[in-house]
Image 1: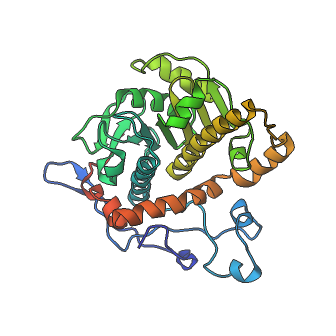
Image 2 (image 1 turned 45 degrees about the horizontal axis):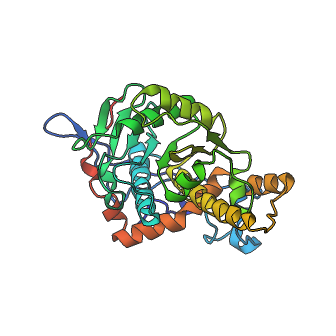
Amino acid sequence: MAPTATTENMRQSLAVKGRAKPAEDGVKYFKIEEEMTPLEVSEPQSRTPVDDVQFVTAWSCQSNTRTKGIPIFLNPDIERRHILTHMAATFRFFSRSGFTEGQSGHISVRDPEFPSLMWMNPLGRHFGMLTAGDMICLKIDTGRVVGGNTSRPANAAGYLIHSAIHKRRPDVHAVCHAHSNAGRAWSVFARPLEMLNQDVCNFHNAHAVYARYGGIVFGPEEGEHIAAALGSANKGVILMNHGLLTVGSTVDEAGYMFGLLDRACEMQLQAEAAAANGLTKHIISDEEAAYNFKMASEKNVLYREAQPDIEFEIEMAGGEAVMAKGFETLRHPRP
């Protein structure tokens, strides 16, 4: 059973089992029992943004047909497994979307137990092959490997970019960066997106442009410049001559927003081409765009937006156990 597939009947209590056990070499590894599940707290009686995107009736409010937002966990090991499994599924979504370019591209997620640590993908392993057991745990401040799979190194440029953002933005739990084709194409204009469609309004006053190019990131300065360009509240940034970057409260949100940002860049390019031939663009007003953003950009809504693609990737991989492969043997992170 998937970690999110729990019912509201589990509000009372849940035995915490499956603590990490020491191995013979003294290194802790994860031990997860199948019965361990997350606890989801009861939802408030008032309507939420999650309710507003579904048809909620008096009957469905009392049934298990309502979709839920970000799950809450009693045990950090269970939450970690959920996060890394969804991280692997997000990478496979990136692969299916064509966001691969050699060894470029990376996703990082802040550890749920130790916020000074982050998990990243290994260098050179194809996005479409990643599982939870491939991920590396790094100390955000220093880049020192403190857990996870140590059979491959992390991407140096990835660490420099992601660590700068995690330091500057404590509200951010996940960062996605890749060199998608539409993103690279639109980035050459160093212009923000126009609100051409209601979906793009998820970025209304919530994305920035880094209008300089500092070369491949081999030093901390460029990562700090990118983090500064992202700003204190934006959900994404267009990196001139480089690519795209998005952030989120969950890896699900950050991954969904990256796909949306890439498709928005593609749509902008198509609209610009049509406008160059004399057609008039009709842009959504600031008032309507702000309303769309308010209704569609709450973190639980964006988590739910990602689930169809996450669930598809898990199903195509052969189930959650396949996507989580190797998690139990990962070195437990140590701050």
